[in-house]
Each structure stands twice: as C-alpha cells, then as structure tokens.
Length: 340
Image 1: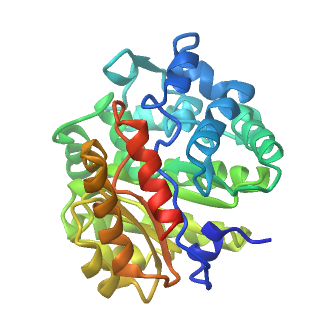
Image 2: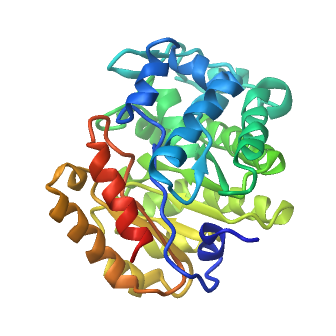
C-alpha cells in the first residue's frame, strides 16, 4: 500500500488531501514537555527510544498522515566538528564558528552510520513502531542554512557574516558549501536506507538572498543534492525555503518533487506558477492556529478549496508550529483536512 502523502508527492491520484505539520513533535504538546523536562534536547535526538516516543506523539494525538523523525538540522554539523549546545530559550549556540579557509579545511565529512548512527537507528525503530500505518519523513538542513549557523555561531537577523564570506572569501565559502553538500547527500541517503519514505530539505534561510544570489550561490548545491539522491533512490524529495516567493520557479528547477511554501506566498498564484511541474505543500500561517475555532476552520478550508480534491497537494503550515499553539485548534485543523 502506498500512503496518501507519497502518492500526493508524486502527483498521483489521491482519495483526499494528506496533512502533517512541521515541528509536529514539539513544545505545544504537554506530552512532549513532560519528556523535555527530564532530558536535554540533544539527548532526546540521540536516544532512539526517546526520539521515537516523541515522534509518535502527534500521530497518536492528532492522527496526522505522516511521522517525521525527531532530530535536528545541526546533528551533522556537530559530526563535522562544530561544538553545538542548545541554550534555554535562546536556540542553538555554535562554540567554534567558521571564520576562514583554515577552519573549513579542518571540517570532516561524516559517515552517518559511524558518526551519527542514532539517526538511522531511530528511523528503523520508528518504522517498526508505525508498522506501515503512516509513512516516515526524514530531513536535513541544506548547505546554505547550515553554513549560516556555522559562520554566524547561531541564529542571525541579517546574516552579515555568511554574506561577507560569500563576497570576500569565495574560496572558503565554496569549500564549505562543497563539504556541506557531500555531508547532506550522505545524511539523507542514510535516512532513506533506514526506511524514510520521503525526505525534506530545509533551506530556511536561503530566502534572505536576492534571486541572483540564490541562483549563483545556493541553487547549484540544492540541485546537486537532489540529483544525486535521485540516482540512488526513488523516494520523493521536498524542498522548503522561508520567504521564497521570488524564487519559486527556480526552486522547482532543482528537481524536488514537492515545493513547501511559507505563509507569505499567495498559494493560488504558486499553484499557477509551479503546480504543473511539482507538488505543493503548505502554507497556513502558524499564527492562525491561535484564532477562534471557526477562524481556524475557515482559513484551513480557504487553502483546501484552492486545490479541491486534486492530486499534487499536501496540507501543512508555512513554517514550524509555534510552542504555545492551542492543541484543540491543531486537532480541528487536521480534522478539517481529513474530512474535506
């Protein structure tokens, strides 16, 4: 049996629109918070039993159409040789950020089964737990976004350091992007071999670039990752970039099967621009889930009505679900999609 999500990713005929949620295993669920109180974030990511336990929570509570393995995009960055910690309420901190060519030279290209085996082990255990009831989604950060964290030392408002390296030290920047590209290919293929039914490439921060910068400095690496994975497997690949309205057509040229949209894009226009080439995922504003129930239902229906019962669409938010989101509204959104 092929799952709804996979059929929709491949633009095959579907009985109804599938739904899952970015960051669906997270702090908005009290069941997640109870586990998080006992363990630090990286321990949860690196302990297969814990990763699977929290990955199952949105499936058991919400009945979404797919499970995404609980992990983090910085897992391979740590394996490359960067010390990463998660500061409470302040996100990730990278303690030895990249600043020059010598720093990049020291980075290794990790072997997933040896250097981060817990990711594959978690996926295998998750597959077993699901017993083919739902597909499993694997994921990775993409080179530009990972490079941004590695150079900036954490999150950034203006991405000045990475843009400065891109402009002023192209030799170091190119080597870093090459190493990250190889790392991401290995990381995602390892997840596919472990049993992932779809993989998503998160290049969240690529939307801070102009269309020309995206074309010159990001697109070639995204395309190479997707092309190499497609030589190795027929598992569908989704690509997400936040604030991507001005690069949609170029994104669809990467070879990705699914383009995941942020909430700032008019999804009807996106459907006209790229809907014949690829499947589309998204793009409900995560803040809408804080509205009254009727508002949540109507905003969900507004998107569903654009696609009708047609193939090639996966319902999701335009970004990760927010920590204090009312669970009842999330359930209502999922039920509205399932019953549409």
